[in-house]
Image 1 (cartoon, rainbow, N blue to C red):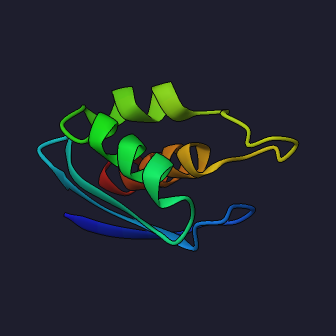
Image 2 (cartoon, rainbow, N blue to C red; image 1 turned 90 degrees about the horizontal axis):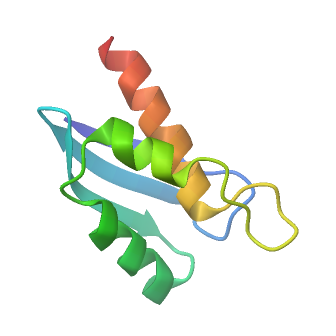
Length: 84
């Protein structure tokens, strides 16, 4: 299933991702720090959604209370809530 999540408090505007059988199959950040976010996307692609969510939750960005990885964690939580 394809999901789009509109972020808040980060440089990225949105995150698009696909989930098949509980596994992240594609992750793309819209805007933001392309090098770092491309790395995050590659690192979590292929992981179970719950594992990726738990690894990324609560990561801040400098003095900001959230980050693009944290926003992905929140997006994955919403996706899990929608399927349960």
